[in-house]
Image (spheres, rainbow, N blue to C red):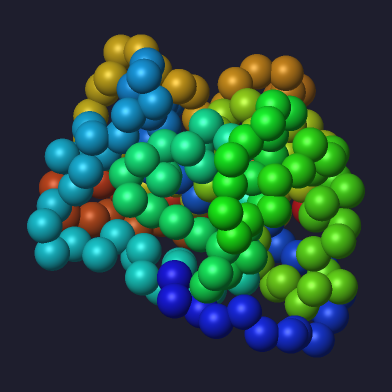
Length: 186
């Protein structure tokens, strides 16, 4: 994600993509928030479409725990791509926008900033709040051939049943699948 922040022309709509790796039993992290299992399940040399996906993203939206885990793993956002971290608690953050604002308010501000595609990254609770508000345009899941048994779920409750339409599927080395859905009501 080495995009340089530049002034962009406003766009009509920002598409929010919830893109995440998940176990066969629907977890995006282990019970402690760890994702080592995900890296262990990945086949060396398989790109999983990540480079292309990252190149298509203009902004990142994430929860505070995902942000903190990302920093602990050596990741970082902000200087190369705009990043909003949703948090209701004080959070030490650098080069990102920390907000307690409603997700709908934040997403409504993105088109004026020229953001075409925003990556909703990790966080089943945050993803549930976005889905319940009708803010997710696409759900992209890297379904990995591993069963965790317990952990942090893909969605963390508080949502009505949402029917999805499969728009793309891809099989990867080692038994992983890339599945892309969109909510049927869109």
